[in-house]
Length: 283
Image 1 (cartoon, helix red, strand yellow):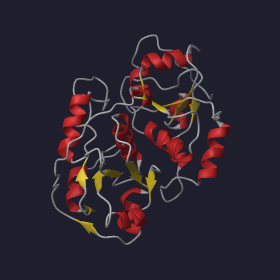
Image 2: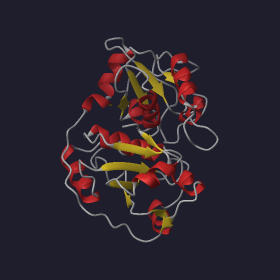
Image 3: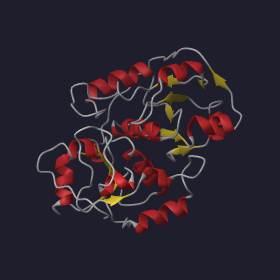
Image 4: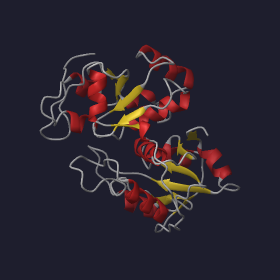
């Protein structure tokens, strides 16, 4: 199943397929809005909320990190994310949160998962109807079948940095943060990048309408960064959110070797860990 779906294709598929649409919106650093209120005001018909912070480890000192299997299965069941259902995530603004939700669902073994390309803006642009009102989730059993090769921790990334594990790290943060010329949004965190990492700000993957660039252009970008058919890619960012946009783009064009992994702790963990090697300047 292709990881992306257009607004018109989703609207048509809803008429004959068992599809659960989930709004995964959350406020990213620099944004200030209430995603729950926005959902109540206007959402795709039949959609339910997928709160990324709820689908996270409550005991982690890092932002919205991966939860345990038991927690994810319980919450996914409550949201109606049954294993046999087709799942489509969308964002009220952009696609980054939906990409994180897509990656999380696939990490725990749900393979029939897609992202609405262009988010809610694309749905509106297609002239498709919206609903208002509360979230009316209907539970459906979800069983975890983890695919932890899609997840990297700090040890994995240290092995890549020190050459003990093959792979290429792609960083979705802004180029200025990557190069160490702009501050991080989280206090006390030094900017810069991991040795050997390459900069790929996630916004550069998108066109003016907030949709991915054509597949041939994306492939060209990945090749220029050193991604070949044999490259194992690890995606990183500030806190594991926008890294999932790179993973989504890679899967959508089948670039690299197998499944990309996401470094869940990302820069928030790396830069706050003593003795982690940090480089400034262009890669």
